[in-house]
Length: 74
Image 1 (cartoon, rainbow, N blue to C red):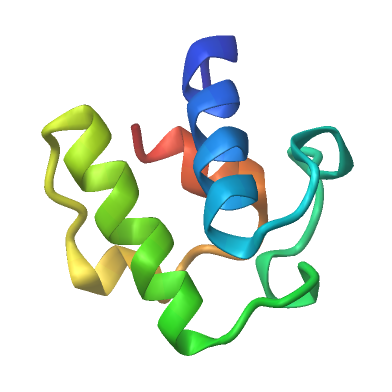
Image 2 (image 1 turned 180 degrees about the vertical axis):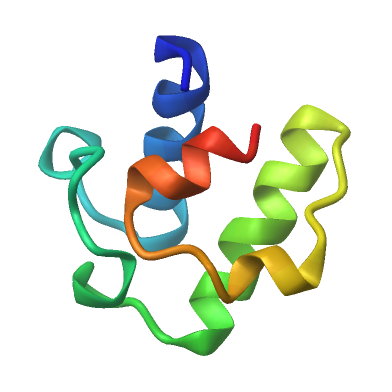
């Protein structure tokens, strides 16, 4: 995971969930993030795909546990 991919992931999560970016760390569990639900998670995935131009395999989403795991997909 590069620092750039982590920063992109943190920024997009913060924008989607309306929480401060500095409150999001790589080791944070996605399911425990403030304001997260299935719809906001999907919005995060779409935002990442739009930002990076890369499609995320839906089956890989089931493996994601932490913010760092999500950043590694980039």
